[in-house]
Length: 101
Image (cartoon, rainbow, N blue to C red; front, side, top):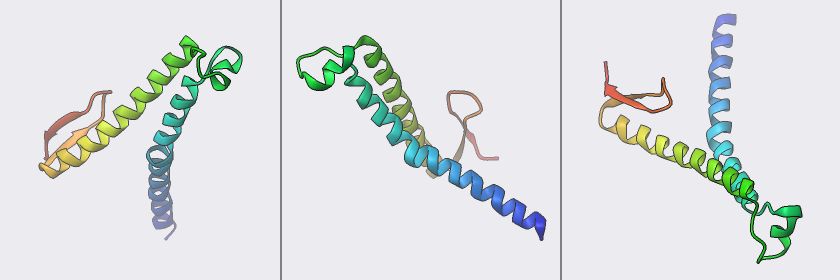
C-alpha cells in the first residue's frame, strides 16, 4: 500500500512540475521579456517614450522570446507527431521523431 502511495505522489509531482513549467513558466518568461524591453538607463525607458532601451534589455528580451517560441513549437510538434502515429524524443536539445516501437 505504501508503494502505491509513493507511486501516486511521484506521478502527481511530475504533473505539478510540468504544469508549473508549461502552464505558468512560459507566460512568466514572456513577461520578463516584455519587462526587459522597458529596461533603460536609470528606468528612463519606462517613463519617457522616446528613450532608447538598454542593449542588455534587448538581448535578454530576445533570449526570453526564443525560449517561449521553442516551447510553443515543441508543444505543437508533440501534438502533430503523436497524431501521425509517431513518437518524439527530447534526449538532446533538438527533438527527434521516430516510428513507434
